Amino acid sequence: MSTQRRSYESGHKPKCLVVVDDSEEWDRAVYYASRWAIRVGGGVVMLRIIDTEDRNQQWLGVADVMKAEAEEGANAALDRASGRANGIAAITPERVIREGDPTEQILDVIDKDVDISMLVLAASAGAEGPGPIVTTMAKLVGSFPVPVVIVSGALSDLDIDALS
Image 1 (cartoon, one colour):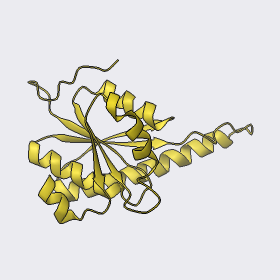
Image 2 (tube, one colour):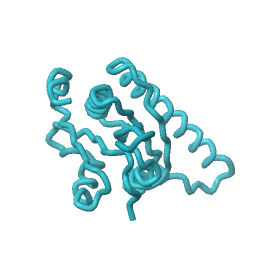
Image 3 (cartoon, helix red, strand yellow):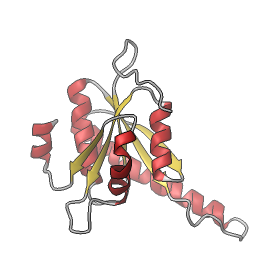
Image 4 (tube, helix red, strand yellow):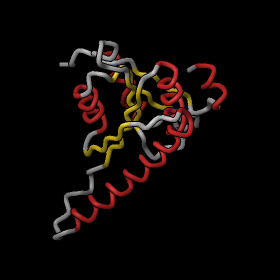
């Protein structure tokens, strides 16, 4: 069950959620979200999801070391993305790091922040397909609690400027 959005009510401001991953096109989503935020006076929430698939290590301390390394990598990725957003629109995005299934984590972040009014993803322009998150989201977009904006990885900054 989805929480009622309050993005445009008094005391609230609209935000878009951007997933920051290791894809080549992550920058396109950050660029679009930052331009949108400055245009509407909104905010940006950047989400980095840590993969927990290999965490069931039996050796003492190995899982803790892997988690610390994953968190360090997540913070570095969010630092890059936040710096990019600040350079584009002079904004400081909120940062969220989650572990687990990407779809579940995206939905949970949206559910817990009533000001999130859209999810912004970037799709790969390559022959290999749009990317795993976009592919997964495409199956669920009809039941999603907020609009999903998919930005083509082939769009230039000028193209995105004209659209946002």
